[in-house]
Length: 120
Image (cartoon, rainbow, N blue to C red):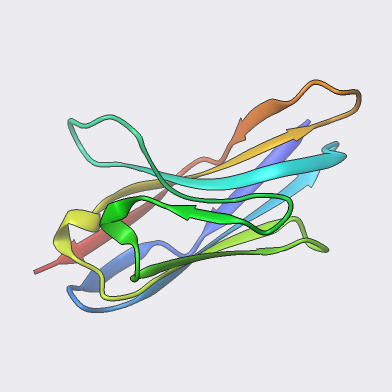
């Protein structure tokens, strides 16, 4: 069993900041990429940011320059620092971990989601 525990969501005014965290625990033995997705009401889930096992990062165009993804390898934790937040950043943010509990096959593991609401 793999558990992902997210924290850090909340309500913030436009221009403010939030920091999300997601800690992976349980039987996971290898982690490749760690990602953050978000989903606004009535829309599809979209990839916000990715960090690979080698530390390479990728961001959606809409958050470049405002969001920073980072990773604590020792604690199997991924963070998303969100600055200059806009109302359109509102949504449920999900952590996704691509990893393995043994062997060569990789699986996706999802967190429960944390609500981020940005007021104008």
